[in-house]
Length: 438
Image 1: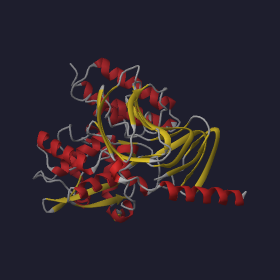
Image 2: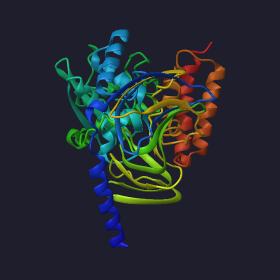
Image 3: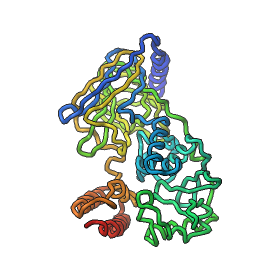
């Protein structure tokens, strides 16, 4: 068995060498095309009909995938439109495009900001803090990431001092002069946590005044002996390649899931599909009849499916053999709403590709799609980002409540005790927003 494994691995490594060569630049092809999606044709298909891998860049509607250039533009727009500093605008950008969730991986590779924002979307406080800190740093700011025992938060150095803005809780605290406080300053002035008058558009009302949550977090800030700088640890990741590479005889399928309102991305393989597969996203599952290698491990699927390992990022997959229809599924951040009825596709490829609208089967529900509704801090994502606090109705509130209760009832990640706490949080939040409903 060990001998067979070595032979297969040797073959795959050799195949990777021969198929990784780029084609002549003279064959480069540029595409700019509008694709209409509807109930009958709900998928953008990018097909490689050749027998060799094809590498290309991809831009959908100017907003996916997001790169630092796009993110900087969005931060500038938020700053201008909402009259905020660049640091505050970056905080809002991360808040609006991520969510609190049990992490896809507990390893630091998923802290890579572009990979997280485009593909994963949700995680624990250390994930969200690392992403915001990386966005700030890309904007030219000095940053650090602080662990206060049971919580991780980022700080940015601006206006000649450290300032904390928490993307997980949606909080920040100020002194009497209106200056944002650092983690250390909050620990020295706990009353600031209960005296904020910040606009609820930017500050999570679940933490306003002496609430269940604000009191809990004040205990963390009070225990200053547990504060430690974890910046170096949190930034321990490699950058994600920007290019897409499809193996021969395969297609990239980007589908709109109307039921859940998010996109699904998978690579469809068929008999004779072979070669390098690489997307700037996270591959999370594979199914069908095929053999492939990823991170020095060989997988053989015989009409079966497998969840891919999460210990390290799978940057590249080498497809060795496929029999019949098979596929590799990728994570897409459910907070990114980048597909429309009319979609502008811009693509620069090393060889010809076929771009068209097609029909796909019902997409798989993936990480984050339903779990957005679950977790001790995810309730505010349902209400806060649906703007239930400012413009809603009793009917809308009741509908949100039904979604929420159904989610925590069916989730295997919620214990009975956590369920009780979630309902307590819901009722506390409900009392805040119902007073605004006429």
